[in-house]
Length: 398
Image (cartoon, rainbow, N blue to C red; front, side):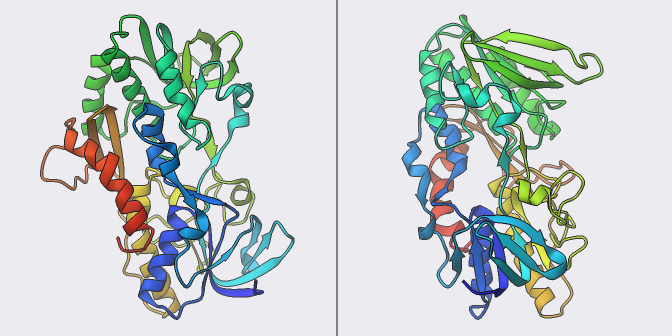
């Protein structure tokens, strides 16, 4: 490990890997290093399908070393803090390394401890979550074992990676119960910290029909605060005008929990963060608002759009173009319009492909109404996107 590098990329997930790969495709003479302590790299969008019982969890993981782009160095360590005034980073080992340019892409942090009793019960007592490699398979076990009672699906009051994921597994579950003639015995409920079902009206209208079809009960302005696993109860607290601070205990047979999320602590507590804790970047250029040689993309950034892999795919070439322009003393030409995408599985073999920009305007790729449930879009999600991720996206080819 050297004391200084030309370009340091913090994070070896989707964002960090694709930025590094595309940088070297543009200029093989660049010196790029990725800092990430992970042993494995995960294709996380498939975890919803794992929870639904139609994807093998082992197919979602590969050794981290296998996805590091050729020509890119890898420092297998965790970052402790940033010192952008001195262009340096402190590592967990105590080493300090300097950079000329910095790309911050460490992903998002899952705050399991914010819900009392969640860590102690996850993976048992009907408490499941698709938000980790370890726990996703238990979700399908819960679907199979639930024969009656409440099936609760939560979405927290915080931003989350893949904002549609809390709903996807709910629709998959409702469809599973329906196909097994259990719909009359099981009440599916959505408990959300949000204000509405979906932010883009066109797709929300379509999802409301799905909710109505499955007779799903909706609850908004609520926050999950406690799990009582032994008694299969969940405690919610309201924070809307009508239900502010109202506490409600709800019995469940199974509960799928999407944990509260935030930027990683070493980002939140750094000079790079905004008031909300995210890396403070200009939303069109992805350049930091105070430190010109720092860029960020993906889940840890302050970009006000969906935190999805599809968003990263559009952000990456913008960041790479603007970073290279900065290095060459040229004017930025890259402009990110906030594009994000959410492939909303609404049952086995059915999917609504929501694509939108910063202003929540639909940005549809295909020449048909994507708000309609389609088998073809399910095939795209199930087979085509995972293939493209491993063979094209991580290679910097798209």
